[in-house]
Image 1 (tube, rainbow, N blue to C red):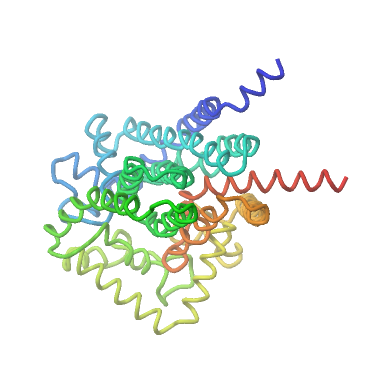
Image 2 (cartoon, one colour):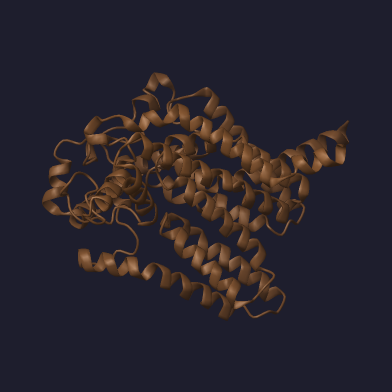
Length: 427
């Protein structure tokens, strides 16, 4: 009986089933938050909802602000087209669509139990894999993200987790089929959220180094992977060039995001003054200039701000770094996050405590992994060091860090095991 119960508790299928049940239960309480009719149902998916509405209505990939605002490259296409399919089947901005989309997010989040279990087992063994899998099943940030945000976050997290697992396994093969699949998945993931590409050179470089150390050919496999990635994303590049008469590789929203939190007007997490949805005159400017020129102007003003206020930019970048890893922006006496641009991350001692402890255990786990000579330590380090770096200088949010939360949870599980092992030796 003990052996059977042990196998059951160590089952990723059970972790997935319970994770899905918990997330779907959370959806039943949270989905109505998507149905707020403010600003023509803007809270229903925000930019994602707008683009999905345009696609479902036959206007194509457009209208990121309002009907008639024109073609857009604000986002990459994978998740908006998924949302558009749901709108087609269940109605635009309806309760049924909200439930379906949040349920899909819950499915993506629950499915992440499988790669997180496998990646932890690959690097740290069966026991840590079990801890990591159950940690993800009950992970509060994963539950809230799946149940409250109609966005690509949960899908990107699932895809990036599989990419990380494939990275750990590719060091053992030079088969072209495996590397082509690697490139294919990178292409698909980048069309969900291109930010993931910042870790690609580091991960693929590590795999090539591992193959080189064993005197195995790595050049052609890497070329196959890169060519496959390029083939996947090229149609989207071509579409953007034909629409905007300019080379826009993935999306042009990054300057807008950077301008929200890099301007001298307020010392808040971000300001809605520059937001074309809420800012006075900004929507009119967007419509007059068109999206490409609007984003170019945001780029110029952001660069001018950095040049004019380098100290303030450095200070805010540091604060965004702290926010990313602790959930803390400011004390309530300063206004706190509850008065900032996004009310979804208020000052919350519980959130700050959970995030800080998780970060501390993940760092401890990473240090122990290097000390123990764990082969996978470098890929984990790349994920933690490189992926969030773009948000330090643009716009930070715990939700933006979520795609690497599986690696953080796996490291924290390893850190917990090492902590308890050392504690038992002392006693």
